[in-house]
Image (tube, rainbow, N blue to C red):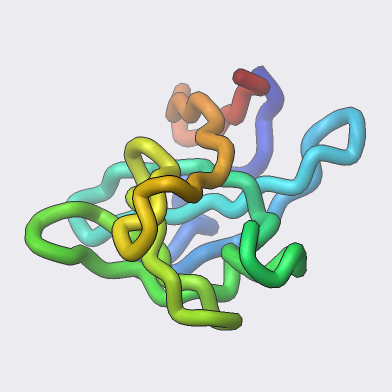
Length: 106
């Protein structure tokens, strides 16, 4: 796993982009309950690296990030688009250790 940033740099309900070794772009999100999630930063509809700029919230109790491009919501736990379950983004394993956020490659 790669150390990405201190946990306190991730604000609740906000996303932030990070670059992993090998040029892999991830979008990190911290929800209001303190959970941290990592998805691919690439929106599968527009192919733009924008998911980290999306709105974080929930849909029916499912934590989601909503793409700023086409407003599709992606389940932060699974990467599946709740608007179109045939589409998904990659999910990356996340761990918080000693106040640092670590992200792995699936």
